[in-house]
Image 1 (cartoon, rainbow, N blue to C red):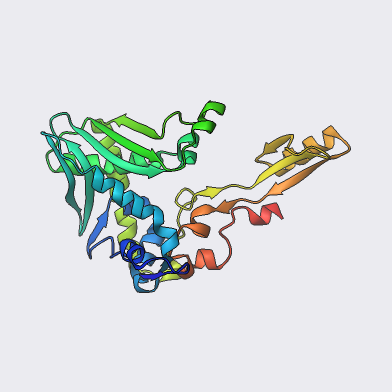
Image 2: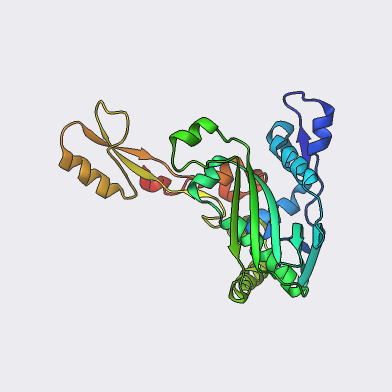
Length: 292
């Protein structure tokens, strides 16, 4: 990977954000399994040509520093332990921040934004925790609970007093219980993802199916009913015809504003987008034709 330094930041920061390949040949990590198959394969194939800037990786430095500070083992714990289990010819790996063997509790530390907490966007953490649980169970360890402790990097005490949905503290704990049925379900997810990954390894870049809407972090097109002279929308709807009917019913001075959807990850967070025909063809805006 090529690390650029557009802001001419100190060399120490450049070295701190430089990275090696996340997955060794024949291995795939728990966090990688959360990505789309197309992203996984393109990242691997074009690793040497992927480009990222030091300024865009600053929060990764903070995350690494936080993990280093929290690497303290309790009497019955192990930390930063890598564990693995084979699925066919592929080995699934995971590096667990902390595992309390006596109580069967996985603990993972995160740095996160307030937005993630406010919208309750925890699907990726849930799947990561369940993959860790599956790995431990397959290696003979008991798991009863997963806990994600998030340090909120943009927390504001002032906003916390004004918004009832705003987290009250700069630390948020997301936790859930683990059952045998949960582990069976995540095993099915793992096997299906690896099966598709192996199948697509034989395909050319452009023939690999695009990532799913969830994997692309798609935001659908919305239709806002607006009133002349009013700053905020009267109503925001998912359907264009419904919005137009409402605007017509409300009468003079009302109109429909189209708010095009977007594939957030494709546009801003996927490093292999320069090698992805889905992005290059300009179709990373969901429902763009419908919005026209």
